[in-house]
Length: 277
Ligand code: DGL
Image 1: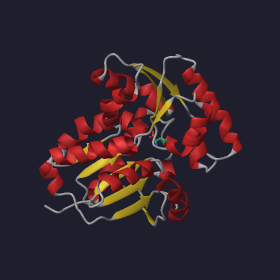
Image 2: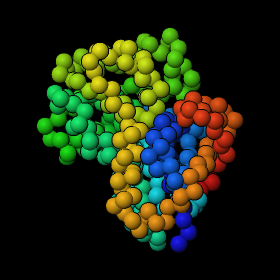
Image 3: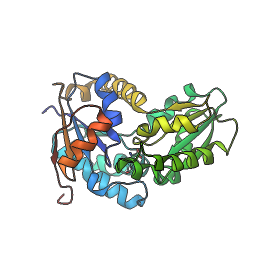
Image 4: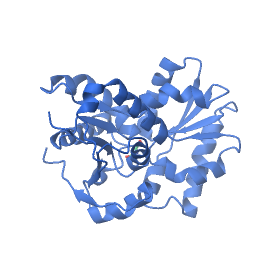
């Protein structure tokens, strides 16, 4: 069987914050990153729309020879992953295709980040409304209380390069306060959106000083590396040439400019259309 790169998908740039950590953990592997920038943000879209967009993207990765795709987007993990895993993958003729998300690996270890057993979750409206974190954390840590707050303005601020501006402060403070007002026992806040690490300085500024702020990059990277160890057959067909190729559904020049901010290095992307699939 042909070896394939590991696909990393996000609605836009956020997944790059996960890719960075995955590459660090698994430098010998090859990756393909796709940002569906033309249709981002996903956070306020319906279940059906996010599912359709995500499944189109996953099929595109498969057409590029990927056997394993990581949905590095909480919104798509919350709204599309289960459907893809339970309904789409079993009907494929190739039964070695796998799609993973970011919510389960985070829920599996979240207990390590709280002493009070009270966790705050910040995410897009879609992720919060899906209650995916409440349901997943309950499976692994039934004694943890989960408080949630949707932050609908954060992804637009980030995607529009306003995350460092004075204007961003208002919305960072507003959502942090709305979360922390729910309980004085919250000692740890999970940034449950792969875009949010770009706001981390402002989040730290407005969160209580002793609050732990948890990001997902390293958690997802560690979980992926353990997954590949457990699935040797799949690991054997993952390409290991240490390369990463970038694709966007919008203008590559615009993507290159923005993406380098999230990724920390220069990026050269190519255009791809998902509408034709
Ligand atoms: N980065 C995505 C996430 O982790 C959200 C971005 C969006 O709203 O499209 O939820």
